Each structure stands twice: as C-alpha cells, then as structure tokens.
Image (cartoon, rainbow, N blue to C red; front, side, top):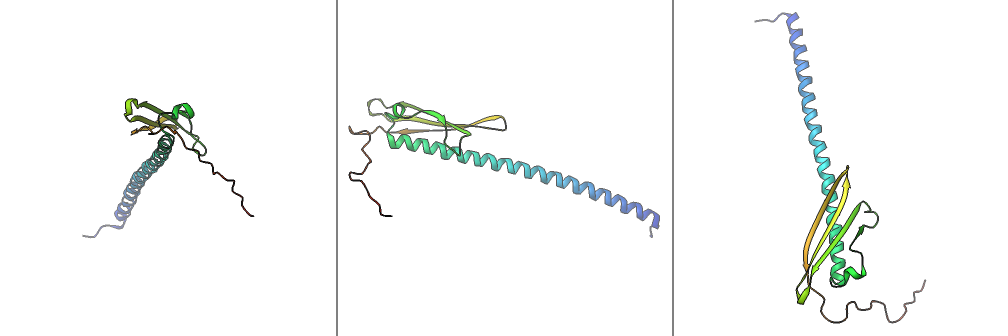
Amino acid sequence: MVIPTRSRHGVILVDAVVGTVLLGAALAVMLGILARSLSSQARGEELQTAAMLMDEQLNLVLARGPDSYGKQFPLEGQCDAPFTMYRYKLTIDGGQGGEPYRVVAAVTWSNGGRERSASCETLIAPRLGEDPDPPRRPEEVVTRLQ
C-alpha cells in the first residue's frame, strides 16, 4: 500500500513533535539528576570538612590532656580561617577515679539558611604523672646561618 504524499508530511511532522517532546523530557530528567548530584557532592564536602575540624579539636584535647583542657583553652568558638563558617563546641565529662573522660566534639555550620551539624563522641584516658605538659623549648638558642 502506498501512502499519499500529503499524509506523509503529516506523519513526519508528528514524528518530529513526538521526538522533540521525548528529548525535552529526557533532558529535564538528566538536569534534575545533575542538580541532585551536585548538591550531594557539596554536602559531602561540608561533612568532610566538619569531620576534619572535629578530629583537630579531639587531637588537641588528647595532646593537652582532657583534665585541664577546659581551663586553658576555649571549649567553643569559631574555627580558624579559612573555615570561619564553622563553629565548634567541646564537652568534657567524667574522669573521676581514673575513669576515662567522655569527650564530645560538635561542629555546626549554616548552608542555604539551614543550620547543619555533626558530632563525634570518644573516650580519652586521663594523663598519668604529675607533669601536665612538659616544656617544649630547646635548652640552647639555635642560630641559623643565612
């Protein structure tokens, strides 16, 4: 059966319109997936930065000793540059009778008007001995030649 020329033009036009609609729908779906993946990547980077900042705070407590850390250093505040959009807070409890200290490090930040946070809890043993922090300066002055 041979289709007349006039109806072939109509079929071609319908095919072109249907193809354009399908292509538009596919592009819309792909752009939606791309937007979600970009926001997920940004959230992942923020969480990675928050984890690094919590690790830094916990290492400072470990190095200085949890028993007197709160008396010598601030337990909360704004993180140093370039991480000024992040704030940290440390909570140190326990440590009586040789028991370990319960240390909680929390980091908060704002993204798109929403407050986000991450926290980590660990146990740190008290320092043994009488010397809380040994002197770290060299006994002799080091002279360098230029």
